[in-house]
Length: 240
Image (cartoon, rainbow, N blue to C red; front, top):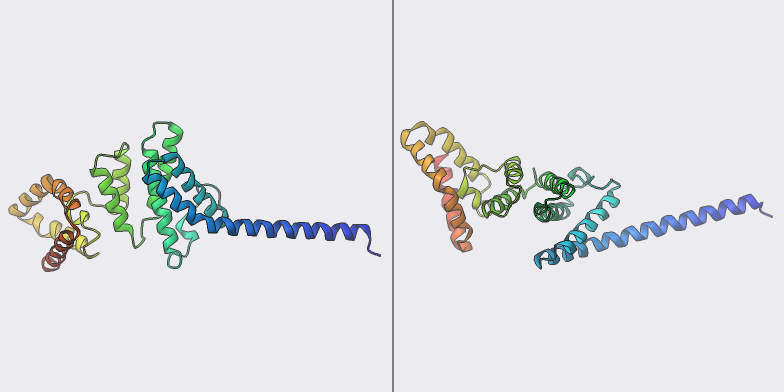
């Protein structure tokens, strides 16, 4: 006949296994739900339901933090397989961006700390990623549309993501130009135009008028944007 202690021990182990299994199943359900949360957060944000959107986004992030076994605010790209989890990384970056914009409107010191944390996470989950140029362009548009309350912080983030505040038009066309076009144009500016009086005059004129031209490209039809992008691609190769 089994001893009482053995029976109790086996019962405890069985209960512990059941608890662990229930926790695993709960985490699986939460992981399946995370996309629903991200989607509902986006819809709420687009509908102007900021509090609801923030709650959905924050719950999504907490699920990932629990999945990765990190404390609140502990998510980093190093926790993901960037190739296999690229969709998730892109989604995280987009969610941090929306949260950054939401908390940009607050004046509460505590909320401003949240704003800075979300901004830092947006940079962290965008820098070095294939979509970094688009993340940079997203920042540029937000800054140029006069929406940002914390404009210095947004400008600093723009620079940290490799944005050149003076390559206005090429940066505005990041989504339709070759990845090498912007660096080639910068090289042409720094090593060719800067060496002649005419070149320096042109650069000065461009710095004064470039922001207006960039805003104009924002409203161009997509075929026109692609045509402009192609012109810049060809010119940058010839100039290089």
